[in-house]
Length: 378
Ligand code: NAD
Ligand code: ZN
Image (cartoon, rainbow, N blue to C red; front, side):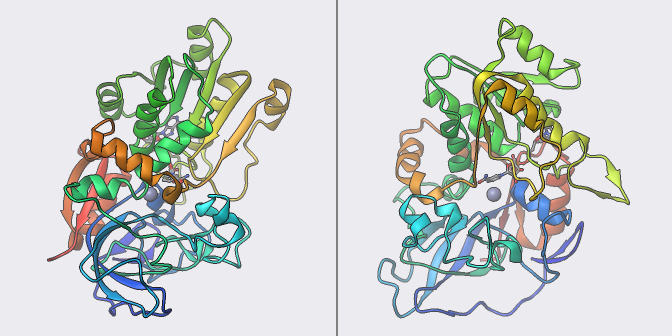
């Protein structure tokens, strides 16, 4: 796919990617997903998103070419590729902060390299394509275990680790009440994973009825429409004996998705009411001394954050891009044991050439879409 400017993506022929470094490999893509993070790009809200770039940070595929120094993979291996591009060796990677790798994006002050995520995240082309160049191939790509469904595998590149890390950063203690804002794939997975940490009650807030229904069944939790409960903060306080939730998770971010956004100058814009409200609500409805875990993606500014309430309530805020490679061993195990069944979230399976329709359906939350998957030609 090719980004043509805000709201416009197209399927177009591009040159084959090439090995640029001896530790690169080339992967023939078998499945790639569209993520809520792609919507920030699609809507033109991520700085330095260049026309002509290819998005896609959630993909699995087959290794078809190896750089001369790749010794951990062989041709024909089927791999799942973490969305973070990480060298595995720098000081951040050595701490397990693979989303903050220095080598893969040395000019950035914040994020490490990410496939298909603008020049802010290193300028790497992504996997919504037939072929993709994968750097640091001795570290990132992980051979898909025999017998694992590719649809499950592709969800391990981002959605499962991000949902899991959202719950992990929440520091959930046995019996805790956890409130998750956002019932997109990430919020759904965060709700599911909250139980693994011993939550006693899990509540999800969104306004898409079909997603609220889905998460209630999939994650066996409560779910509420913020448009029908008037003030979510009061609602959460009331249902927690006026104490507030132990943990709040923001799985919305600078909401790039359809109907909750105000539209200014014809496009959905960053930091409008439907978006920053999730973080605002999270801070205001967590208990004093509680934890707010943010996985929703924001632009660099945070001027809508009620920072005074953070101080006065003594709240801890934790946030990051998920560190996929760190979490993979235990999450592969959960998928193999069936405690997490990620492919259930995939509602749409479309040919790569229909990428433009797929973005529209996912962005505007049409046709009960939760997670769309793109299939390149064989
Ligand atoms: P999505 O667009 O499918 O889902 C977002 C959901 O939030 C939608 O269902 C929307 O209706 C809901 N929403 C909007 N405003 C809300 C509000 N005020 N309160 C509650 N719900 C609200 O996106 P997704 O794929 O689930 O991703 C969610 C967020 O996670 C995005 O910001 C994405 O960029 C981010 N993300 C972060 C990481 C990471 O590593 N930190 C990885 C993947 C995705
Ligand atoms: Zn993603």
